[in-house]
Every structure is written in C-alpha cells, then in structure tokens.
Length: 61
Image (cartoon, rainbow, N blue to C red; front, side, top):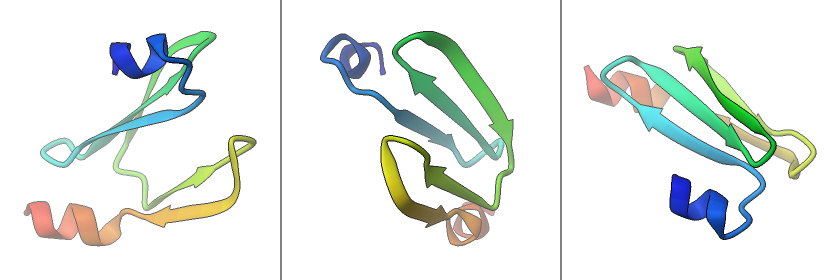
C-alpha cells in the first residue's frame, strides 16, 4: 500500500478477510481500521461507488 500512496493514490482499501477488517488509506492521514463493514463507498474519490463486502466475508469463512 505504501507504493500506491507514493504514486499519489487518493484512496486505498486493504481487505483482510481473516479479520474481517478493512484498512483504509488516504494520503494525508494514518490508516483507519474498520472491523467487518458490510460495504465500503468511494466517498469523494469515487462518488456513487459502493462495494458490498458481505460476499467476500462469507467466502472467507
């Protein structure tokens, strides 16, 4: 993820299905850890984008 951030990526999600957790990376702040979210949205970077994470968590079990 550090490489993506170094290249100027404005939003990165690192999904850890064993947690389940999502680590959210933005260039101007430390990573934020979210435990077992059902979905993620693109916020101001990808307006209108929404990713349903329930199938990902279910397949990891």
